[in-house]
Image (cartoon, rainbow, N blue to C red; front, side, top):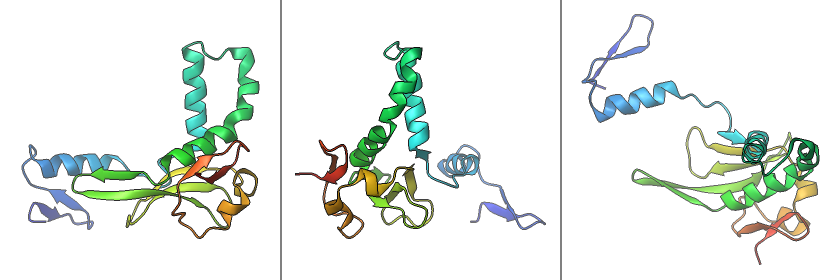
Length: 157
């Protein structure tokens, strides 16, 4: 805090050395403001579809049919992020998949994060894309989860 000076409007001005770890961290943080999840199932799927098209693994006339697998891509992504432990500079947080109450859908959060903690949001209906046994478990789910042969999210067996 000794490296900051108050501006008349209440904001702060950095007066420290501009070739320091603190300055680079401050510079990085001041350029990134995330007000929602880092990414969504829509952006994930569109990026995947675009990449498959660019490497000619998906043809233009197949794109509409490919859109039908979007929910499965979302469920698979949720299953792969759940219970992953992130280790970042002397701290760690566990990703957990949860059903969003109120407006529906599902998401992945970083457990224990104080401020920004939403990583991924999926607009899929958990009643359709989760097995009843999983939905009956308290959240966050302590078990590992997977995309089941039923094409629903369920407990890893």
